[in-house]
Image 1: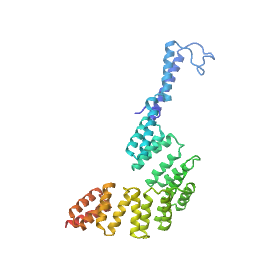
Image 2: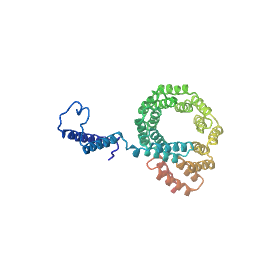
Image 3: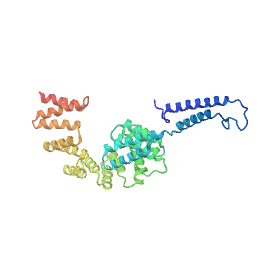
Image 4: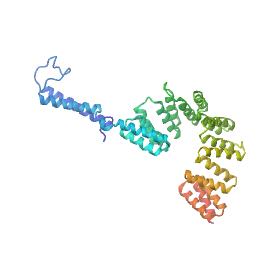
Length: 372
């Protein structure tokens, strides 16, 4: 049981201690039989007591005041070292050293459990790690500790959106926007627009996204989200118009090149070579950009260029990790190349890794076919 002043058990203990002290002091008061005067009235001051009793009462009062006021927090909160750990974490994040940053943020919160920015940082780290329950918990703690920071509500809304709790996300983004002093309200407007869209409220979605772009005309996220929405609505020209803006304002980001290639490929708006060029441009920006590596593998696979498809797929697994579709396609390519043993390795692995999925069933059928 925690007896920290901020815990429920601690508060109950405080009340019990206070009640006991009051009863004790009343008992001391009653032990003196001299008549009360205005000067000695117990509502105004305590009567003069023998020295040993007075010291005892003062000690109890002092102990109670320390406990209630939280003076032992010096042993519970190490504010200075907590901030040092937090600053180190931010420095590691700027250097793309996520693991080291994560460890420092944990340390910052352990040293000072009431450090709101530390909880916010941990919430964002857990969000990136797809541990959404932990992310939600830390972000709610940050809001509880400091309810006047709009970014905390925006970040919590992102967690809600990611897990499909769009109504809660909408309320959280609205709360962020409601702050008169908010340095980056366009983020919350864009996120609110996306939550509206996923909640089936398209009119509100476009309104919020356009508001975000009015506030910040070179806001890449706004153009990105509009590109996705128009693509899903089968309006490729509008999608490309926004994605080209995304590329214009974020030329060093590999994603807009990839997304442009995807729209051109899906709606057959360009030649195969032009689509490949878009994917390759994204890899020039970031050599290990997994979506483009997989897309190139798929493009060559569907184009019957087995050698290049296999090369990109194997590069994808080496650099990006396991993927059920890639495993299945690699097994198929090895079968076509006559190497059934390698195909079996991927198929067995596919069945084990993705049990009870359509991919597992497809891999099982292929394995049965090549085993006949």
